[in-house]
Length: 144
Image 1 (spheres, rainbow, N blue to C red):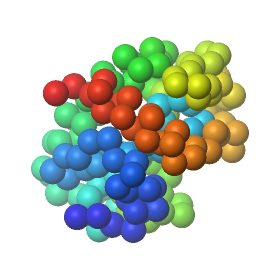
Image 2: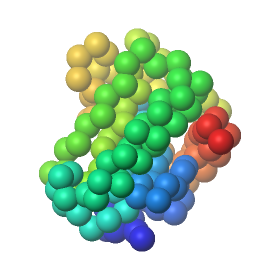
Image 3: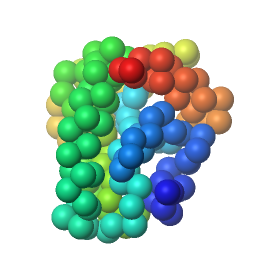
Image 4: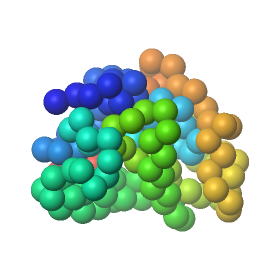
């Protein structure tokens, strides 16, 4: 099941991993390298409206994301932002945080907000080839 929020974040081109209740997408705009969107597959617009199974599966999805992002960018902290101001369905922006810059495949991203909140307005917008490169890279680093 794919809702409008998942589509807005570029599914299926940005899909890294699909779980029963969640999808992990590459964030098309990267405030830090490896920024993701963790989106509920349901039509719920309130976190508390998700079924208990989705909440339980969240533990698995977050552990997998943290393991993959640790390998990818050796983050120092990780921010989970549940903003839902424009895109109504339950989702988190997952922003790995680090001092300085990280790069992969010629894509270089500085954490402009470090050590304060992430500078979402200073994100690197990815083109289709860059998206494909980063999606493939993160899929390879994902725990089995």
